[in-house]
Image 1 (tube, rainbow, N blue to C red):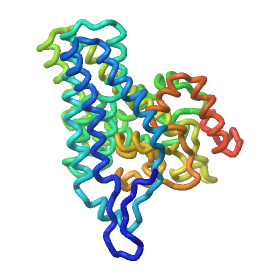
Image 2 (image 1 turned 135 degrees about the horizontal axis):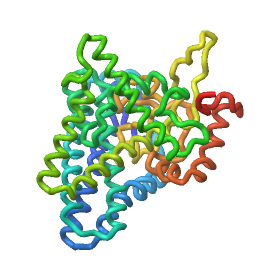
Image 3 (image 1 turned 90 degrees about the vertical axis):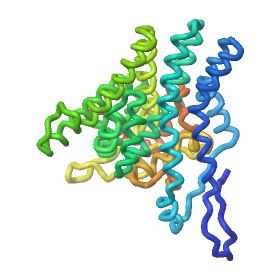
Image 4 (image 1 turned 90 degrees about the horizontal axis):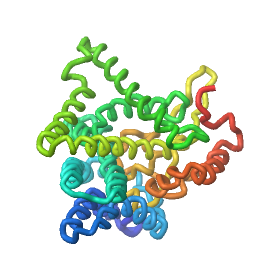
Length: 377
C-alpha cells in the first residue's frame, strides 16, 4: 500500500505528502487508556480495562497484517521543504501532555477502584506500553538541537522517569549501535528477558557517565541542577510525591509499575531494532560506519504512523538528524516480520522469536556466524 500524493509527471505541481494528515493517528494510542477509564465509569464492567492491552498487542498487529506496508519515499527535491514545515513537529509536541495526563489518570483510576487481579495486570501492561510510547516522542524531539524541542523531550522522557534517555541514546547508542559494547543492541540468541537485565542498568550507567563527563569538561559539578539526569529525576520524584500526598501510599506501587513498564516498552523496541546485527571492524581496529543494514526495518503502515516512523530505523541510524516525515526505505534492508507491536508479542515468547528471527540474522550475515553479534568474545 503506497501512501503518496504527487502530481502528474507533466505538471509542475509541488509534491504533496500523502501521509501529512495521517500522522494525526498518533493521537489515538494515548486516548485509548482514557477511553477505557471512561467506559468503566459508565458501565462498571472490568472488561473495559482490557482495551489498552487488546489495542496495542492485538488491534495494531492485526491492522498491520491486513493493511500491509508502505514503501513510498518522498522525492529528494521535496525533503528540504518537508523538514522546514513546522506542522510535523507541532504534532509531536502536542502529544507530549497526553503522557502526563495518562500517567496521573492511571494512578487515580487504579487507586480509586477495586478491580479483579487480571484487570490490574492487563491494564498496567497495556498502559505501560502505550505510555512508554512517550519515549518515542522524547526520541524524535531529543534529536533536535533547539531549546523548545529539547524542553519537550525533557518533559516526555520524564513522564516515565527515564531522565537519562536523550543523553544515553544520542551520545551512547548512536555511537556504539550494533556492537557488543552497546547495552542497547541485542545479541544473537539473547532472550528479551536476558537483554532487559543487561540493557536497563547498562543504559543508565552509560548515560550517567556521559553526563558526568560533559559537566566535568565544562568545569561544572556533577551533582547540580545543571545535570540533566538529576533535573529529570527531580521532576519525576516531585510529581510522584505530590500524587502520594494526594492519594496516599496506595499510589506508590502503581507509580513504580507505571514507570518500570514505560522503561520496558523502550527495552522491547531496542531489542527488536538491532537483534543479532553486527558492525564489522576495519583494519585499524575501529568499527565500520553505521549503515542502513545495521538496523532492522519495517514499513508496516499503521504501526509506523502511530510511532512516527520509528520503524524505518535503518535510515534513522544512518541519518540521525533526518526528521520522521522524511525517513526512507531502501532495498536490501534487514526486515522485521511485523510492525513493532507484533514483534513485541513474538519477543515475549523467546522460542517463537528465535525460530522467526535467527534464520533472518544468518541470512543477513551470509551464513557466517562470525559476522553476528554474539557479545564480547
